[in-house]
Length: 109
Image 1 (cartoon, rainbow, N blue to C red):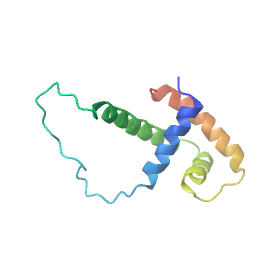
Image 2 (image 1 turned 30 degrees about the vertical axis):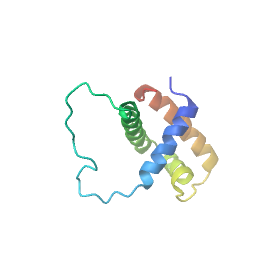
Image 3 (image 1 turned 60 degrees about the vertical axis):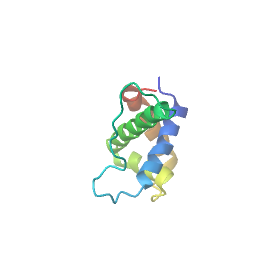
């Protein structure tokens, strides 16, 4: 089950992901490498974790974009330094509660 602590960690990753420059031409940052099969490197587990974190961030981004506008604005203010909405604290708590409920169905820990 997704906890609030884990949700806040994913939200921190989402904030970094949202701030990242997106001026690419659509080419991958890494090329596909071929392996002889069955080779496990020191980084293979870390790569799997990074892929899962990236998937969780994309899922959370979709959920955030489906929240009511005032809740989105509260999250954007808190994590991306956007304009502070009226009744920020209330809307932010409501947004976190909704995110926890919705993300618990979609995100595997």
